[in-house]
Amino acid sequence: MIYWITVNYYSTELIQRLINSVVETLHATSLPLGINHQIIIINNSPDDLSIHRLKSPSILVFDSPENIGFGRACNIGLNWVYQQDSQSIVWLINPDAILPKNSLTKATQFFEQYSHISLLGTVVYNFQNEVEFGGGEFMTKTGKIAELKLISKELKTEAYILADWVSGCSLLINLKNFKHCPQFDRDYFLYYEDFDFCRRYAQQGHLIALTHQIQVIHQSSSITGKNPSLKIKQSIYSYLLTLEKHTSKQVLLYRLFRIIVVATFSLVKDPKVSLSKLKGVCLYLKRLVN
Image (tube, rainbow, N blue to C red; front, side, top):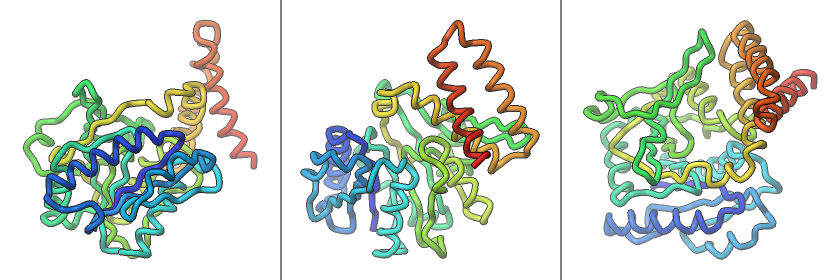
């Protein structure tokens, strides 16, 4: 059984497009929608009633009380799925992404052969056929969290490669490898929650992998790009939170100081971006005080 989970925030039309691509990949397997597959939409904009027109026996919509962020919204779907079938595969997918044909077949075949993989990321392309995510690296000593924009030779030739982390834009979770339902950290609202998710479960012994056999196409920043200042603020906050959780105090303080200095000196040249970064810093410091 495969469950797709996506989070809605005023993006009904995008999710309709995503659903259409899911239907196409289901048709490519000659299996009807609703048999061994389910789409779950977590509605983070409860006043967006248009999302409910997408409901069907195979498409469920769960309203969150308010915009609770990506990770906490995914937790609602994960908890529901785990109660239904703790042996299933969950595919977290962004609402502004689409699946190429045969994606379901490839995902099913992958886990039949490599059932020891707990978290599987896919290569993410944009609509210009450029690599948007080709793997995630983490350098503990420096606090650098990198998204690779190229496909390595190893990734092209191997069924999968192990990764430090993979993108929540397209993340498959093999639930049967978990004794308890996997959860995103509630401290995160947006950004880096996928990194934290992967690192926590890697520390528990779960294998995190990336495959080129499964791909998705993503319309980058189609949702978060509507409010760039908020995007920068939340990104800075979540980055500092991540350093707090996964690096040393020395690294955190260095990165915090560097962000403040660079943003301050850039105030005249780029005031909007600099102020947004400083607001993110203030939001993080407020968390420490509280």
